[in-house]
Length: 263
Image 1 (cartoon, rainbow, N blue to C red):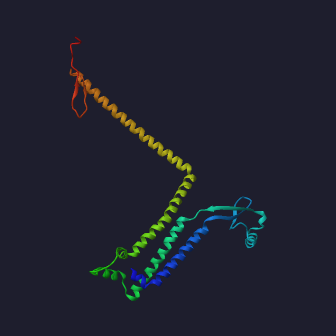
Image 2 (image 1 turned 90 degrees about the horizontal axis):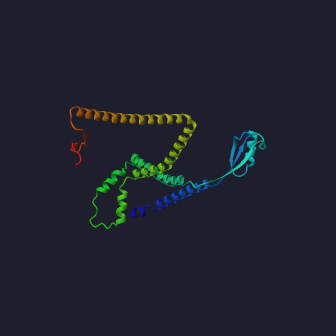
Image 3 (image 1 turned 60 degrees about the vertical axis):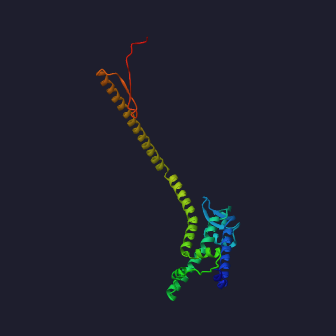
């Protein structure tokens, strides 16, 4: 690892400076999109926006273009709208990680493809041959160099693809969820009577099912009472003493025995 850095020191310095400049430009663009922003909104007599421009005032060129297209500016209402835009952290984070990794992966893929097509080089075969070589018996590698060598044997394209996918998902998924939520709320508000009717129908079906289960349970209890009543009548007709059924686990019953009365 250290020998590779020493042999390609100039290349690594150029890459580091390029990545730093890219990160600086990404941060500058994100910072320019945040803070206090002002826009001029020009509305007609009905309140419809006919023209929007950035800044606190209308330049002479924009005024000339507007009056040539829409007529005199005095016929319209000009409103200055000022907003406080927060720093776009997710967009900055995604661009700061995704753009350098994507550029490095693209460059590595192009270099690997050119080497395989025109020079017949195979990085995988070279790495496989290197990994198959036995370590020298008196190797003095440090622990950090061993860890770096272990990570160096991993597939850089797979690692880069996983990181790039995670970064893009971090940027896309929240926006997608917010879009679905706004679309769902807008749809519900637009077709509120349909969803209200559907909700009432589902509530009625749910209450009807509960009522049917109540009737079924009541009928089952009535059937059990009729069976018990018939059993007691049958026992009384045969001259047997009345018995109360015990729980099924014990299998015993309570017998009522006649006595001579109090002594």
